Length: 448
Image (cartoon, rainbow, N blue to C red; front, side, top):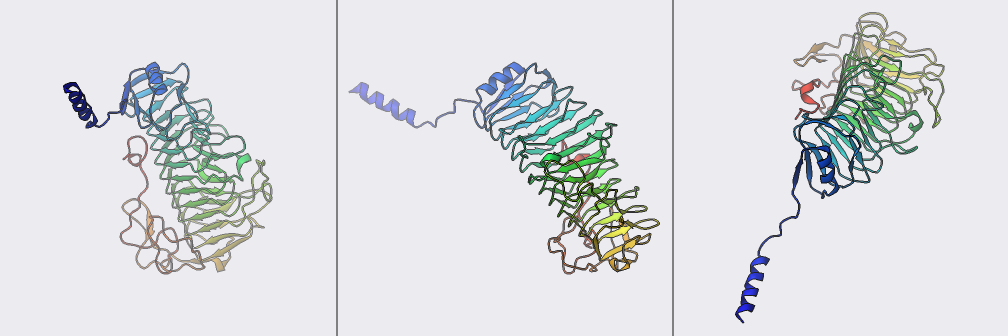
């Protein structure tokens, strides 16, 4: 009887304790081999941390468990000089804080869904893309891509076979100093491929900074459909934002300095952008080698039904231009833009282009071959603010002066709500403006 009561008491005492997990929330390892062992037995929710220092992966480090984080001990302090990670059929894996130097790169295969790539550094020349993404729902944020001179892109969004990776979210990254000197193949971001142009990627590229993006004429090269490119800053770069192939992409609220925007394809919206350049061409209406590209075509496609509206464009000569090609822009719109040049015609559109012009305000040049009905030649009274952006000032004739109906333009480049009759240009006049160009402090591995 006594033994029975004792046993019951012990059982009651044990049942009062909350069970303790059989695994640690954070596992710290010191080498590539111990990292692989920890990954092989990882449980969802764990954070596997590799010690700082130089590491060489003679064979890929395999990640086969979902719901885990693989992190550097200190952001930027754990460096791979060769090799890297190989992801299997996993979900919700985060790779955080590593430096991929030398030949080390990273690829996210199609079966690695909802991966997050954050606060990593990709430095120097690689064989192919520094980071390649084939999976859906991948977030690429707060990374630094820098100092490349050979052919190959910093970030390639691809997909399995003929498909495109969907819903990539690319934000707060720093793309710096791509100096490939060849004619083509050194983009900072290539979103798709020409043979995938008709596929809807539904990607968002926002709040990224590009400096010295000189490896290609296209800093952001869009080769897929239904994307958003917004609130990025490009400084002093050969590369433009280029809608090279695909349809229905929105380019909104970007701040471009000695860069610009060029487009091909159909039904794009280019709105609320600020372009200030010492080059002639802030906006380029692409012409085509064909009227409409087939699914496998690599030729330039004629732009059809593209709207360029409510932008502030500051250049020298032909601020808005069109390039060569037999198939000219068709059924496009240039409306409610502030266009400031220095001399000559601010718009130079090739003969045969079909463009509707309305509500533009120009200054510092003539309308070029834009019909007089499409603009007013009047000083928009632009004043540079504390952040170096030219904005409308009180009494500007651009205030409340827009024409036509563009119901999707509900905010300006700050972004602040547009009220009443929208103002012409990227800036809706407001004494409490908030926007500033991105700097290195706002993006990359050390940003908030």
